[in-house]
Length: 498
Image 1 (cartoon, rainbow, N blue to C red):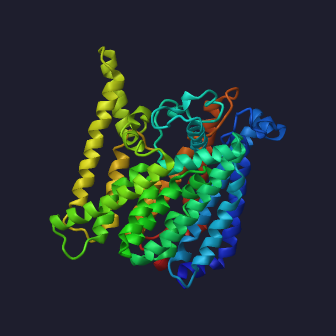
Image 2: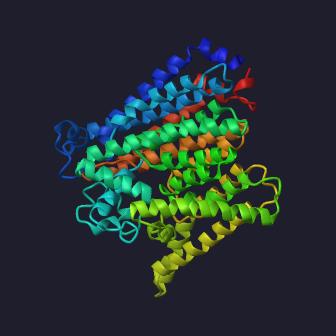
Image 3: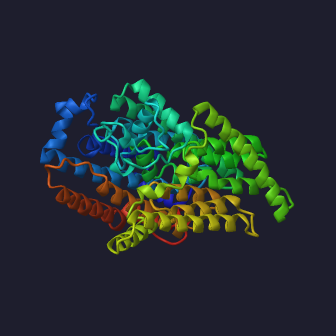
């Protein structure tokens, strides 16, 4: 047992204590979500008419109290995650089962929260509703049906095609049908689906880590235990966990030399979020034999492409959506987000061209298309790299290029990058600390950005208060909390800290 673990245990840090501290933090976040989480506005919502929840949202004291609880919960959960880091150094300190139980305690209360950090779950239901009304989410935005705004969806997707694959859209349709349009039931069922994705991530992260010579507990701590991951996937009921689980299972099956199963797993992941189709060439590199010539690469790529196309055709036929997601992949510029560098560039150039009398939307589309070509070129260059000894790391760089050059970058996209980089190679301690700081920064930014505050409050003032409070609490955590500083101090990592 490392000296650091002994030191922390003498200060009252134990696996049991961390479990209950994380549980308490999640309880605070869940209670806070009742006042500042994304609230259903549909007439079918029983909670929208509940005086108990309305009290939290309509009164200033309720909103302020919930902001304080949420900020405290985020900092406290992050602290528990950091203090758990020394325990995952070796298998003797914590078993896979104990780690799973720890994460269950941290996330269980989130099953009862209103959506936090994102309201995309309402867009899932809206697109399921469209499909149920025999409208294609690939050809029309969710505004094609009346009442979409009251359903809680973000206006960002009002006239944009769906970025999701056929499997997930049909799943959303089934959930919308079963829920009969009641948002609480729909969100609950989608959250259960997201939880299954998190469980899949935990299982396949450990499996893939072992195949790559990684410490599975450390990999799960870095990927699944990350508060940004748990709060986004379970608290926000996101579908990204399903996608990541599918990609990791595809890599693991490829290392087992099972091309049919690997391409099926990837096809399912693509049917959740089509962007991961770009991982296919790197699945092929794993399946490549000793012959690494260009001809051999082309042959294995053709093989995995055919397998994947067969699976995608079957999924498309069963769902009756076929390949409608393919053109939708390249029209994300309709939902360009100004905070993404490419989205900002397109918006600024479009504004300039519009002032000069040209078409702003066409200019934005051209800018987005150019950067899409650049990202595809980078993926091709990485796939053709001479050193293919670490295909998963190449896939991490490829997906990073596609994400960073996209017209819209959502905070949870960073989780894809963290997951692939963490699983592909044991990173240095300085990189681990960068990951901790980056995840914490994104958590604070998204917390402030995704506050759901009624318009009769002074919204900007509430956001400023939330930002100052959250930054202050995280600054105290990193700068003045002695236990956190004990873990983060030094340059050689927890196992070697004196």
